[in-house]
Length: 456
Image (cartoon, rainbow, N blue to C red; front, side):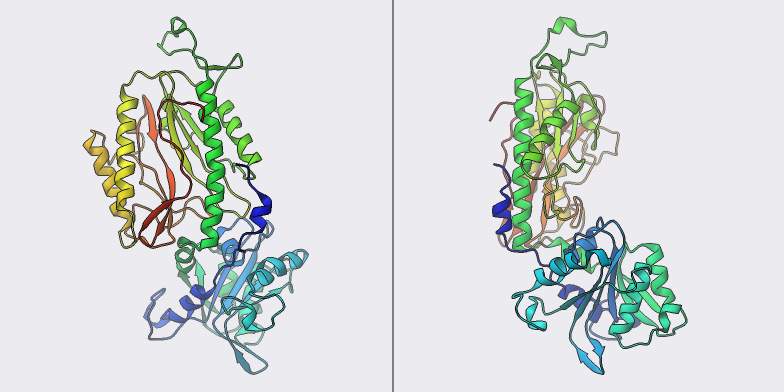
């Protein structure tokens, strides 16, 4: 099914609730040490995120698809203006040429009713505005000036001689130069994981975006399987000195991982998503390379591992892996496939709210061990060499990791992708994208499991 842009326009708008950020500021006890969250002590004063259009944190917080130059977001629980205190406010320091876009994406899109005025106009109650002043200054300087203005200070902190000593929460990924500007302006910085935690639990609107891009991923996988199914085997008497069988052929030419990758990416483009350089295809020994993007001939009897992770129009990713073998002999690859299928089922059976992510990984690893594969293999060794899964959202890899102690909660979207590898033979991995629900999980888009490729 092709991506329906009309239907996409009809989706509920993506709005980021900024209250978790506000709460992180008010609940951080700066007297108890950096990042300690408690109801007692002295709270922080503000939150600042700085990045560009490629920074996933600030894109998530603002829904502003900004340029490749740094801009800033400032959030305060309460501000002081004209001697009067107001409620939570968020200011986006945008490049002046993007002011109109910032108003639409950061301010208007966050409202319940664009005709309303005041705090009631915003679903989360955090009043938003866009500022384009001091555009020649570094984003860190602009953010410091906004913090000072919202909290009622004078403007001397822009010169670095103010002794305000405010505490500002920042993501761990804040650029070093931006941090320096904020500190020179009299702000003590404390790292917070509030954004990562907020991103990890998806809203219904986010799950809908993920489901749609995963459906496009299915279309790409269907094409890959069909191309493999149509591949023509050569004469085995033409095997080379190493005993390698001749490559599959398609339209009279050798079928390679690069040719197959192009077939997949063409379908993704028609579906309205971008491959984002994430279509990973390996065959034979290169199938044991977790991120293979080479150009290898695809031969009968070898595993062909296809991992497709496109990015949708709203920045959310899909992720799916299947493994196929053309004219296999039922040896290592068949045993590995059966083991990985069993590990996937064992992992899925554990997914429900309250279960630790590491428990899911442990069950998958135990199942692989039962089939005789090393569940704790190091990279380059034979066996299971990675975690069972990871979170997916506006980043392809985000919280929670299925190797962590995080308790799974409704709204967590994770991959389930056990695999086994042998650097001398190949690799088998099977991956789906699931959302944790109130009573278990839901697979965002299904695709059949079968080691022998066929047209569907």
